[in-house]
Length: 337
Image 1: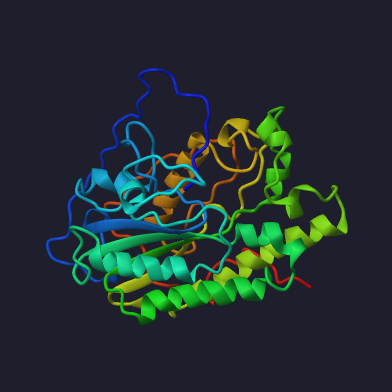
Image 2: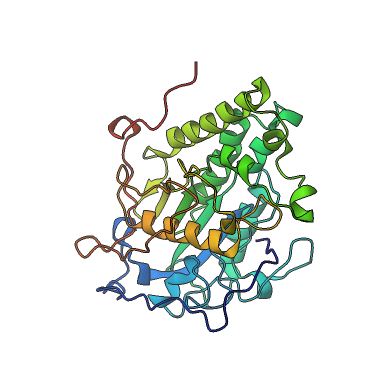
């Protein structure tokens, strides 16, 4: 995961304690419908830029490594800070195998993760529950105007299906996969700062260069919606659900829009990636989604209001994995004409 230099937090900054009524593991190894946070023995990431992190502690920065509060021995969170463009080993990255800048063809990442799971120190490949988070596809949208065939929605779904099928068909046991729904990207056009990094910003030119109201911009916006819709179509089904395997679409980013003036503190100096504060809000959104049923999952409304971190509910302290047919869910999007 790429890190960006940003202003340091005040000296002595600490997040308040996070304590839940039930933070215990299951009495025996559960099936995929009844996995609690404390049952997760390893946390990993695939894609381009993800939120599991792990460098530091919960008091310093909130990432999906919050799982450590439920299982202090959880494996995989990155033990060190890493920089884009510099070589890094598993000792640096842990099981965060995401690669900044990758497009959706991430089969090599997936193969690498499967083989790493098999030999990762302290991990029982057959017996331990593992949690993988996947966030990818936004670079495809960013590059679509450069090659509309290569970065099409059909190719996006093809490569996503290929990677998820690999995890399922190669019998990676006791695995839950969080697939993060793609961000609504048009608001990123509003992130502007008088910084050199922002002025020289070359990220996502297909989104940021077209003028307001142009056909080129409208094409990107519609493509973004179609990426989201097709990903829903793929994952709101029972294709990826077994007694020891589940893929869950987590939609917390689906509808995020500016609320008045965009809070620039959510974004890094390059005006495209998220700051530590922004990544924390995404991590909290992901965590909350994990313990909410399909059709009732929280969605971030704007990049201004902080997300309140929630405990697993007393009456259902398990990660929601049971798929719900798309026809029974609220229609988030209308088909494009």
